[in-house]
Image 1 (cartoon, helix red, strand yellow):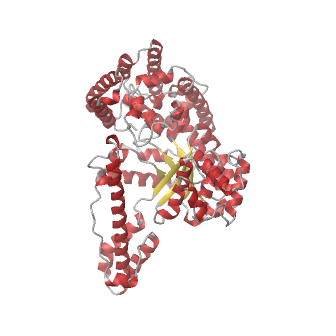
Image 2: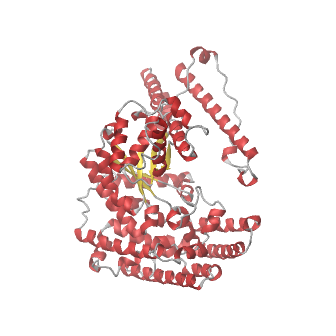
Length: 620
């Protein structure tokens, strides 16, 4: 007990010192920051209380016990204490707060919530190329010029050896501003890997997510970067490729096969693999309906590849709060709508933005949310593909509907020259970027168009105008395709995934307000051609609503959803007013030569943006 207490005191002293150092860094940055960059006075980053470190007593000083960083070591000490108390007859004491602490330690570890790391695949390729060039054996750009099979072969060969490309001192030199790597992004990638290796306590990181993953080499590249930073195979975070676009989802099973075939890979990861499925960017790329079907089939096929190689597969579902980003407020139904046998008791999903507060902001709500997740995962464990077979006619119908839906969506978003100008005129997209609304830059590429826009501002902009275009554009193709209408009705009655998606889109259509969207056009869109496009989109919306209602048999969207209808009746009058205010603020701001110099106008616009988001509840 003395040893356990001493190590816990050492851990507390370490945590106090780390918090004090973080606060000092924040305060120093606050003093030198520009007024627009200063943190608000009530920022959590500045509210770390000053802590007087616990003094080191004689016992601690004599034995020199260090902090506990390993959750398993901490849990073993607690269990040893529990066993000792029980052996001495102190069962009541052992089963009190000590048992509660053991359960918390088993559930949360010492880190409470391990962090994920996320970086784009192209950044990793550039960093690997920079390391190769730093060895002096390879020319700059040589890695980028290699074919994918050659990359896989070279990376696998390096990972199979115990010899790093660079000595630790040479690797550290690459991180310096005056070092051999000129690109700060490349240095940042290498510095991140170095921090994972030695700058944070063990097990602080859960997964390393690779955005825009396109090949097996993208996974091996991250594995090599972490190895060069000094992490052994059993110390590395899980490396999870994120397949986002329609093409990436369709190619994912083949890339997974190449990854599992790479020499030594499965042995290094213990035949376990995490895959992140991107809902936001795939929907932005192909439309909600086509993307959803691609996600369904990709998971089926990736599961088949995993079984072929005897790999335990975990899918990480990258969803947002809105329908357009894969969200579904019906958590239980959403879980059971996943392809059979793809969960198997392992379910990871993102909770983002305001949905964190809505689902976990109050203890009783958080408990209810966890109950829904648990019930869904448990229920899924008792079903197999044989319990709900996917009829060949259903699959054929979905292929036809998906292709037609994707063609309509891309025909508008990608092929109409007027679409991007209309989008920027009729929505607050440009203002969202200028006012720094959101947790990340609005674009991955500041010079790009819609394809470079992040999914959050893409969805958020259309939600603000109440048109909700990304969630329904292309859904009208539930009818008027080569798919047999009787088969489509059979799917709605008996195919759980299909019915869940149709009902979800219908609930979004119930929240859509074309008259509000028309008000934005009337006051913000001057070009007659762009106004005509707005009218065309609202006509497409009418067609979509009619086709969905013809399938569901209701007289208006979600007519039988009493809670939703009551919520819309109560909140729409207030949100409508905020939309009118936002249009007036946008019109006035766009007429100014220097809009950033009118703080009152910007504040009014921010209040309207946040008010609409709060009123609609699932805006990002």
